[in-house]
Image (cartoon, rainbow, N blue to C red; front, side, top):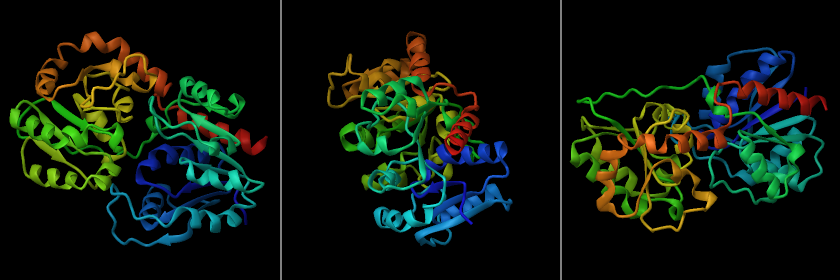
Length: 369
């Protein structure tokens, strides 16, 4: 029997907290719906099976090319089946599904290339000012769900029909399966999260990353949380070397494999944020706290909306200025508090936890429209 709504869990682990809350909210709002959750790997299957349990009308289904990975760590990106062949084989199975919901763009190749009867809903999983919006697949969705009005305006400026965009607030703020950060430091010091961007041209890691980590721990003034973006771990081989050098220290918490890397545990736990252009700063600023940003290439960023997050803290352009900036970040936080609140509100919208219910209502409207 065909499903009324299908959710596509076909991508990286980090997408799960942006999509799963809508499954729960939809089940609560319309328990009689037939819902399929398509999964690409046994890791996805195990997580969803544990959280959802057996329920009438709900199926967890294996996508074509499904990979059984055994006891794969929930925080490490699983090796996924090739996406385009998977989608080509999955498209006929979704043919009679009335609404298909995804949190990544790749699945939008189906409605972009095929005259499918299904209505596709896409949830933008990122937040912040550097998101890529200029992609023709975005116009293939019947509805795009975004966190804030700022994102609706940005997509509309790139040709997406504003009437096909729903603003719900930040869905991940309603994710209630957070693993939590088991932080055990030897001394009571400010907890510093270093979160460099995973793309080289946007990141501080390749220029200053390893040296900055070494300098921070050598200073003896901070407890470092080293839990970098999954894709940075994959694209920068020295990340694991840096992590190995930190192992066993009483002033460093290292995590490269647990689900806490992607569920918001560390952005919630930190006292101080050190980054560059990673969207993790937006999640961190749901509760305003001190920030410092690294700009090793001296970007002419003032007035560039792509760097709006840099209004939220001091921007360091010389590595020698790193520790002094971190030391004064707490005292100077008041100088940036208004900008932080404005940036978070513009980027995330409502963070009360009500967004999944709004997103579920938007999916139901597409289903019944």
